[in-house]
Length: 92
Image (cartoon, rainbow, N blue to C red):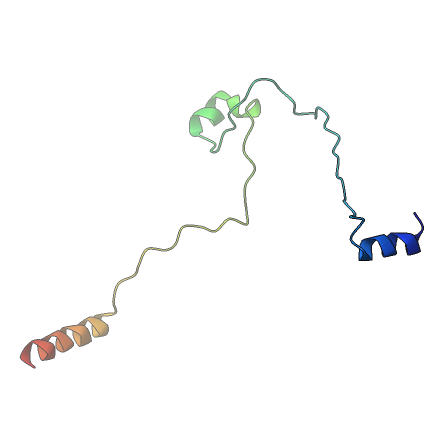
């Protein structure tokens, strides 16, 4: 359709434009019918036997966040301050 006719039909709500997406799916180089479990860690046994050369490893995710650090301890002076507050709260 010419652009003018298409715009007129869209304005009168007689035409709706729809976008269709299609994908081509092919077998890749790592295609396999069996599910192989990828290794996550390199162990001393793998190094000793040399089996690490044949095993697939999971790629590292360098953008992952690490574990949150464990809570620290109070500074000794802050401990004294909190103990003094407890004493004054019990007295008052």
